[in-house]
Length: 266
Image (tube, rainbow, N blue to C red; front, side, top):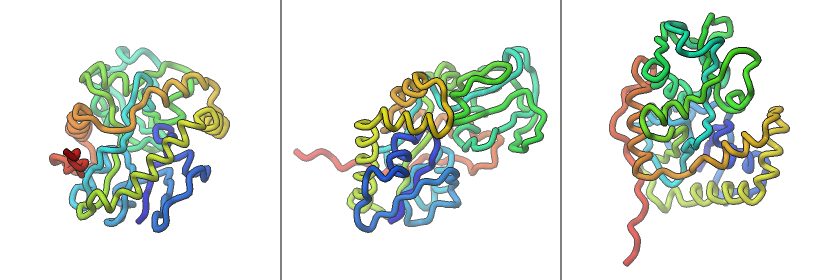
């Protein structure tokens, strides 16, 4: 079984220990990290930790496993960069900066007009896009802008809706039961626990690799995240997929199928 992980700052508690080889995989499990991981990259037999909107392209083959997710805390990993105060921008093309995943796009689509009053006239990933609104994700979201201002879009989403931003979801094949996915879940748990045990090494490695100067902010971001879905998070996911998907190229959302935990004995 392949276990695919989207490698970005929000998933570093899983992806960094995996890339560093801190936890050996169980026999038969093939874990991989991917800087880009789209629905089309996920095979029908794969378990994968993907940006939340990618589940829309996997609804016919996979369901969500609530045991593992990434839920943003007070400091998010998606930011908006603008040259002036957002209330000074009425209409603009929105640029999705290199590496911005579907999660960044959906959070931006759900907040720019309702929260900031910015009307997107288009969405572009082109380097030469003329834009007064640039959406960045991951390491870039923690860097101070060279000019202008930066806004935390995960925080904007929380203020707007009262829901935390769920950036990543774990999916497993529709035919898989709890026993089938158990090795993948155990490996993810082991990666997270090893990352927690060596969190200073993890933060140092991430900060050094990407030139992050504000290591306290990095620590606060990672420590503020949650890594499982509770019932409120499920509602937040549905809300984000509905609001953020409007006008996007992603499939329309349907009620997500979940691989529920086994009922407690007794």
